Image 1 (spheres, rainbow, N blue to C red):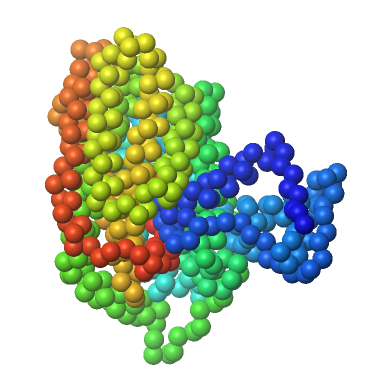
Image 2: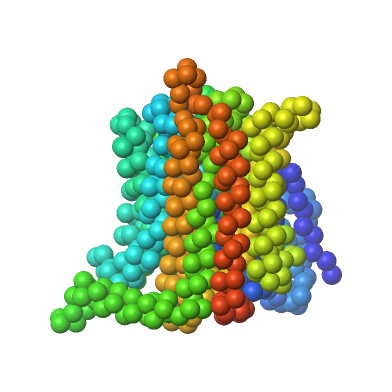
Length: 535
């Protein structure tokens, strides 16, 4: 009795996706959703008969023929169980997979937009940080999209029209960046609309995940959530390297043009959704009236929940934890202008940090799930601040005196800080899930994640103000280049400020203990990490 699985070199990507799936039964989506599951996700084969049929090694495309307790596994069966996670295919499943893949792949334009704002529009580090905070605003109002898609059908459909609209908005935004955008105001407007499209599609696809899990047993028990993360990891890893390498041979506008095709795929796949029409309302009712009624009732439940001390105090901590000033934009200018690090290498760094994030999730799931949230947050915050100060070696070029090249130091520093950041973020997601009582799980969880995103915007704007105050900006004395003479002070202040939320760590004493209820709430309601994430 045996099962033969032949793995070849071209299957490496599939194995990598399986690793990311195994690492993310509790995880956070970047650029933006949360799926929590209380059980480990392991591939399995359902038995059907007592007869065992062994596969022939010379046939690489042999299909699965399952048995009771025994199975023959070929390439098709491996794909069905380990890539599709046992979830049956169908229009809804493929739509969900496409949206998550696109969300990961949209990172293709991340570096291009940064270079576009820096080199072609001439923005200083502080200006770029402030404007990118505005671009993130659509992620703060995600509960509004949930109210719209649940309570205001369009032509009798709740999901399909909004998903099509989200795809068209995103595609039009990136197309405009590729063609007509020529001022900072236009760039911010187009980027904000692109964020709106991603945030709206995120809400719609989360609803599809919940509905699919209810209707199809193969999509329950976290299998579909795991499949979502596999697709997003694939999109993120596929785009990470090319986000930098394409800029070596293309202009940012050409990269934007390629990116515009990705949201369009979301709109096209949405046309294939097999969604049932909402029954017609009684003559005395109207769609708008039903929407107002639903919003009012959910709003009353939310307010009743948020008034409880054990909810609003931990929520305040979540906000404060993410609201500390950031120097990321100024540091990017330093890497590209002072250290002369090119986009191709920065693309490699993105690949490394994507893998480091998956590794951090695996470490948390394997070793830290049972550790109290306060303890995890305390030591990860302190460790992140101390290691963040190592950037001062790069700012002063002291790493060169130690014999460490700038690129090696940058790559290693980013990897370690990414792992620590993920270890600190995971308990916050578990905390958010534990705060959600029955009846308002989805809406309250989305509100908590919106609060987290709002904190990120505040932190970015504080960082922008601090950058401008310290004069880390274009200088005539520096020949029009960025003046980095006060970058040391900026990095020092931002890293020390990241320790301030520890003063509010006692707010978590009011939080209810997590558990199955919290995990179930988070499994039903998915959101982005801020940024999405983005986050």
